[in-house]
Image (cartoon, rainbow, N blue to C red; front, side, top):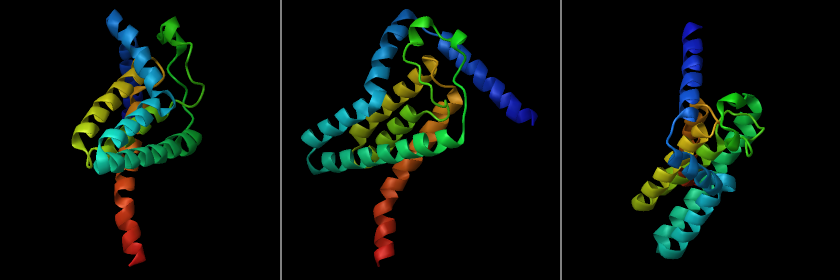
Length: 182
């Protein structure tokens, strides 16, 4: 039992330090990242660009990314968030300007991070350069979610795992369905 409590305490300490950390340019840049990730706008835009300029590979990567993102959103927001209720980091840890758009839903897991990692994880095998750019963006979203006080680091880590699992499921689905047909 002590190990679980130690992990929980470490998670809280890391969240508090991350929320308080940063030069002023980080606080100015973070809202732009949050806005781009809100309602998966960043990933829909990336999918549109990939489909428009990437030919067959771009369209395939975009379709896989959007599908994985949808699966991750269902798993994180409609399943896990409903099964596990967790309060967000305390408001007194968060600067006043970051409190205005704070969600009321369960903190665990981060749905933004799940969507970001799912999209990037599904795109990488099909178009590594686009997947790498998406992966960098996904890391920025994950860091912003903790830095803004919306999530604990463990929420973001769980979102990343759910996202990568959704990407793996989307990549494996055609083979699994094909085996089922034969």
